[in-house]
Length: 115
Length: 109
Image (cartoon, rainbow over all chains, first blue to last red; front, top):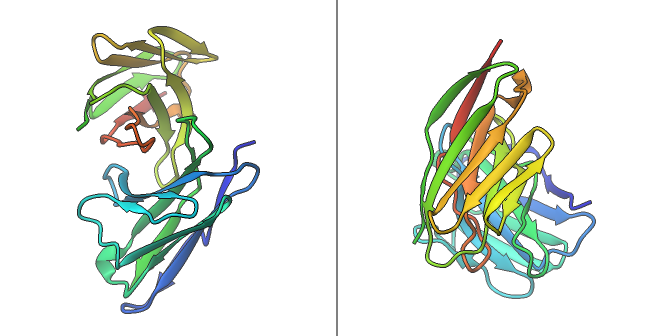
């Protein structure tokens, strides 16, 4: 149980285009989902916290107009990287938790390359 | 805020035991997680400690001392596949995790 999927697993896009990444909880309802980004040999950096049906809370320094997060249902959250640039190339990972429990389940990640 | 301190790298021999320490400072305590992350992959859950003491789960055990802001992950009977980064992460009150750089463990034959 507690499986989180992400789609796509990798994507290559051209500079200036937008990319949408999906995060799904497959066998549980995720009241909260989190989006992380990880550059090579760096630590996971929390980008935003998303609660179902409400606006996401972004960490300091993360541009909310560039990284659009939608958590429209209890099993799906999406991250859209708008007007992507090569510096946005990174490993994007989502995680999900249910209810009041602190335990988070991570998706397998999406590797984004912007050319 | 939260501060997390772990050794950057450790090396150990296959079959041995290794202890990875973590000290942390948090504004409020909500337990402490340990995750394993292989290169190029997402983290996988190892343990979650809320109470003081040692929790054993197969080859992996995790210890917590809340009063000292200290935890360790103990890996026994090391295998080559245990080569990975190990991340300790205390959750914030909102439930989100803030990770440090973790400890990169290399297991040698």
